Length: 245
Image (cartoon, rainbow, N blue to C red; front, side):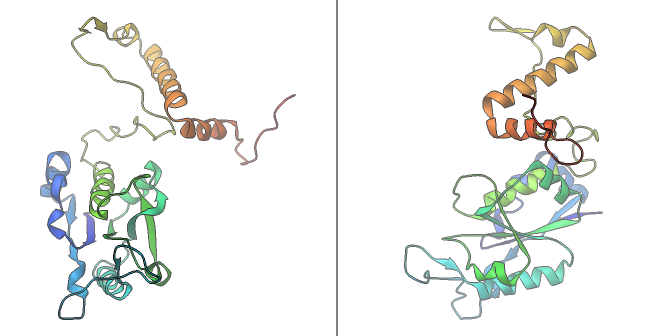
């Protein structure tokens, strides 16, 4: 099954962009996934092909028009029935690795890429659109965020990374940051690869990696660590264990 990416954008030439290279590029050539960008401007109805207008209530910038967006989304949904419709926006829910995996297990995505001040809010009331954010940052448009999301999905498609288990032991897969990696030379600028990784003792290596993943997550990402600790303390019923006095 081919994973179909349908970016709705004012700049379709951005795609596939960097996704035309390396693993994603080889997968594109092999037909593992396809990229079919749609020009939003094609759905404007006036002679100037207008896609935006000034914000209601005043303010700086321009807002993408709901009527144009609605027509573009309807076209994409009719052409690619069953694909989820996503909108890349800083007002969306933060993307998680779990959500990426669920998207990669599907048949593709329609991704609405914003520009200017964003979207007329009525489009989210009128169409089944999931709003997603790639982090607490502001980009010039949704295209860069869409490329990031697609890259995260494509690398998980069967055969793209080679070994089926390549994506199993990475940051966020078990709620933790990934453990640090090393490779030859064994000594570089006086710094040596940790002895345990050169021991050949797989049980000790696994324990060291788990410990480092936990330590680094606790020190660098307190938000992840708190969620990880909460999940460990929660019994299967979903109720929290009572703390002992």
